[in-house]
Amino acid sequence: MIKRTEYLSKNYGKPEGWSLATYEAGGGYKSAKKALGMSREAVVEEMKKAHIRGRGGAGFDAGTKWSFMPKESKKPHYLVVNADEGEPGTFKDRTIMEQNPHALVEGCVIGCRGIGANAAYIFVRDELHLAKARLWGAIEEARAKGYLGARPFGVDYPVEVYVHTGAGAYICGEETALLNSLEGRRGEPRLKPPFPAQVGAFGCPTTVNNVETIAIAPTVFELGGDAFSQLSELHPLNDGGVRLFGVSGHVERPGIYECAVGLTLRELIYELGGGILGGRELLAVIPGGSSCPVHRADEIVSLPKDDRFAPWQGKSLLDLPLGVDTFRSAGSMLGTCCAIVLSDAVDPVLATHNLIKFYKHESCGQCTPCREGCGWIERILDKVVHGTATLDELDQITEIASNITGNTICAFGDGAAQPMLSFVSKFRPAFEDYVRTGGKSQTRTLEA
Amino acid sequence: MPFALSDELERELERIRARYPNAMAACIPTLHLCQDANHGWVSDEVIQFVATRLGLSPAHVKGVVTFYSLFNEERPGKHQVWVCRTLSCALRGSGSLLEHCEKKLGIRSGETTKDGKITLRTAECLASCGSGPVMQVDKTYHEGLTPARVDEILDRLLAD
Image 1 (tube, rainbow over the protein chains, first blue to last red):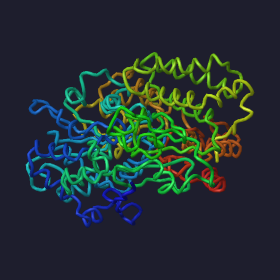
Image 2 (image 1 turned 135 degrees about the vertical axis):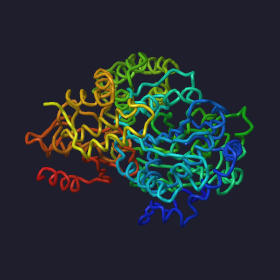
Image 3 (image 1 turned 180 degrees about the vertical axis):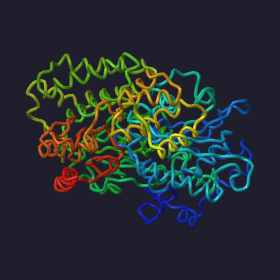
């Protein structure tokens, strides 16, 4: 069901929409003041009631994550905001940082209170120069007003917020790689345990949250956690509130749309997105960033043993509400909720080839299955698109991808394998056509 | 010649250093600062400078430099252009756009024009998927590009 909201995106596109004056005119910074007047436990409880499933893609409950931080420790605690947005198809966090930076800064104050931290680092990928400038500007404005610093809002609870810059590496979106990068090291993921809540940044307890997760926190404290959660159609599944949905690729109106959780892919593509570009048909959709499995337009929901899914049983996957558990149960992944739409102009083999180049380039090289596997699949797909691969090699793609899955330190390997496994199995005839005829019956283009 | 920063950038280095509980954490922002002050690349002299100033080994700094794609180990052109090649942009025509750039500049992706004005590269997802095709020119994004708009941008860079 489409329920458009404007908690984060109210001032998008307005002149000076990112300024403190605009933000405060809409009631900004009242939530931070409120949270600083609450106990740490009460802040976490409120966040838990909101049922915010982590907006970075893993979908872990944000309040529960905050509750993992030690109650007492001699070491400082840190809040680290993951603003290394780089998952292909995902472009929502950038809009917050560029057009509503104060929501993120205010969210940092609330987050710091919730996890017992006095400092937050916002890790922004280097390419996003405008986002960094807007965030620094927002931090300066907030500090000048006394909303940050030694006594924010006159409360004896120091909060500092810093912007940290990456240097070009998708892997730094993985939270432990991000921590290594923040510490001035190569961005290679760490083994877990220990988890960041025990040993995170600088050896201290740390919570890493996505930009949108933190930026929506002020809304939670404005409405109350429970009321926020109930905005969502999936509130009964503990998937609460509103979020930014993105749609890119072959739709008439690509962009970011803020809606209550419960939106479906069909609504995102055909109503908000304005339908398939040039009046063509939908071939496939990747629901939430390229690391999610691809879905064909004709897939249905098949979960006969789970009563919670009875309303959608046997219906098109395009009509299943976009939720963390709905999509996980349906054998998919919600990811970042930013869908990539492929029209029937697209050659699925070339789309697979495009994606493996990304994963090959971005694999950090630490784990052998991922480092060698991504390169090996890329070499096979090079042969496929040149019409020189064999049918055995198509099976090899599946075998290699299966052997990456679960055999690496971080989730990057699974993220690389998912699109490979799903594209090859769901578009097998197209791959075989390349083997047999060099792809004579395929469109041999990605462009509409 | 050893690398050095201007007084103003030295003060900026101090501000960067003060944000973190230890010196190593300042490594990446300091490398950016120095790269920008060194014609867009990290020379051995820059590595030595950063290592000395932050109390790190040159090997550590070199290891960091080689890991990240935005630290240049060779001097790039006066302007750096990245065309996003990843799926969402590819669906909106970034493949044709890159070909257009290569043809116009007479170079392949990864190369620099003979006059040293432009280094052309591809980028992996620039987080601008809803406004593809996209290219980054130095520190600015250009979105929803057409060949005519690209010509305009590249002509301006070539004339600079």
